[in-house]
View 1 (cartoon, rainbow, N blue to C red):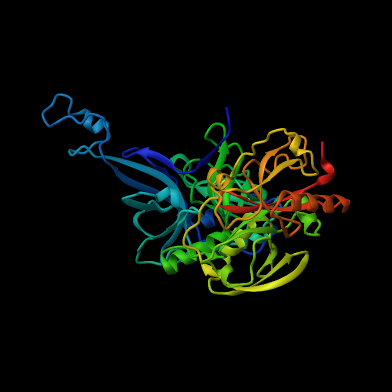
View 2: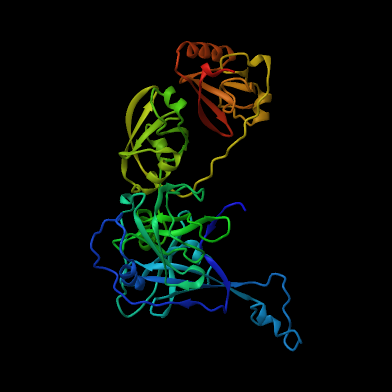
Length: 482
């Protein structure tokens, strides 16, 4: 069976019993311990933390969707209750999840997918009390939500750890409500850091082998100090149950987003105003660098912060606000976490030269996913050149056929040789705009640029192309011809 990514909320029909095993303890006062030394027991830690962990139950009213609703007096009326219907034909659906208290006045963190669409949210404490919760705010991209319960007494709460200090191999403990069995404890280690599970632009999960299952969603992953290291959110499993591949949102991100939800009611993220692409080793060499760090600017939003700064298409960004840029996902996280309105320094490479520019960060309102296109290749005698591509001058017919606007100048790619060095990178319909940072307007100019690059042994040719309403960069190793 193929493994699947599974969110950890657990849906049930209203009326099913939920059994919670309550324990009593305090939630603070733990001393710093070695996170990698095996404890003799987790019992004391579990007892202390349990009162700050809650089970989350929700109710959502579902409109009739085709199943029979029998009228009053009908012999089959009794089956309306079997289907969970009220007299108007509406049914109730619930879900189970977990959460944890982060303040004495009753603020609770959980996952968005646990409470999404709920008409009623309840928090069940370890002493058995069920308290109605209200939604403070939710953030879909990071799957974080904050709830609030109002009680007369101060509640025990837990604090966030510094997730950046967590190391692979550290001991962790999960407490939650798997399959409705509240107060369940499991232990394991941090299996990996910075996991991208393709759930969004801000993936940076902590991977753990502590057993987490459906219903653990929103629950805490503790370190041995009793601090929340992460929020349990997803598993990868061929069965839908735990196989030791659990993923938690790191506490530093949770702390930032939950703080914004509490203060503003929504998350606020920084905005750069550019499209970027990742750097591979060949592209780095074309820029005179080693390794594959950084990203290349492929588009500057004319209404964005970058347009009001000295940022250009083709700039290779190495650092943002003093932080190294580790690929596209890394830049997204760094920008999103930077204070809105802050003036930041950006270290980059432009035209082979290092430089630094300043930019005042804006606030992100929306974003569009990047589009990917599969290359189309055709063998042709006209591809017998160092790049292995058939190039032609742009005309009005080509512009209409490929949707190329009138302000784009360059040479059109008509075919790509499967034996050439551009195979798997360039494709039919691309417009080559620049080679080695120099514009090209005719096939002859392109061939001259290829010949110059071919004579620079060991240095790939940097090519900027226009594709799908945006630009991209590729490094073409001219020595790699088939």
